[in-house]
Image (cartoon, rainbow, N blue to C red; front, side):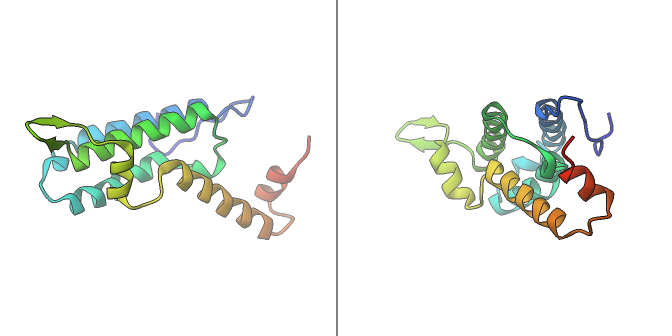
Length: 143
């Protein structure tokens, strides 16, 4: 499957599309895993935001998120952030960072909130469209 194709189903289930996006973003992550070993955290975050996150977020305007989808997106994002920020040393032992620590260090909106924002942005765009455009007709159609 091409990286820029969308998976559309007859029952409007977007879980398969979200799983596909996570898989493609995971591939992007593993291609860049050697680059993410650099010491500068600022560059790691920039790489995540410009090379991995867009692959994951492609087509997110049309996603209908279930709780399971939200959990999968959160797990994927935290996996990347743990790799970026690394473990923390407490005493003589190393441990993974807690979720709150990751989001405090990242200081950006989480992935699920970003999806919701893009959906609202798309909805506003649809409402402002001309009534004759096919995209608006399909979105507002009541079969």
